[in-house]
Length: 117
Image (tube, rainbow, N blue to C red):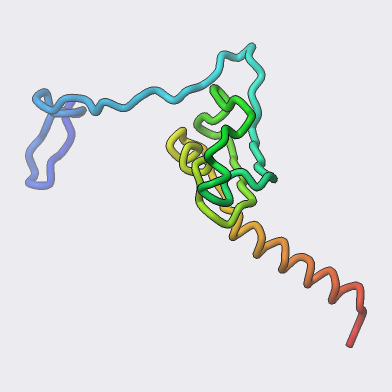
């Protein structure tokens, strides 16, 4: 099978024979019979400071942080958990953004509760 090249000629379809395939690790996907969460939420202060990360988190995240998992870390600092989650293929939402959304929601609820001005 060939495809048309920009210069009007034909080139073989697929990767060039002398170009090695990229070495991309397979995502860490658990077996179908192993329950795994779709969402991880850190509501602790672990990760807020470097000192807090001196101690282990206390939860074994082996096999939990994998491609497709959504991780919400309420801390303002980008600590070890979001970095580990990103490197595992997770979608990560930072604490700074979540706190802004939360505060905006609170302000909107207060304005609604107060009624018309």
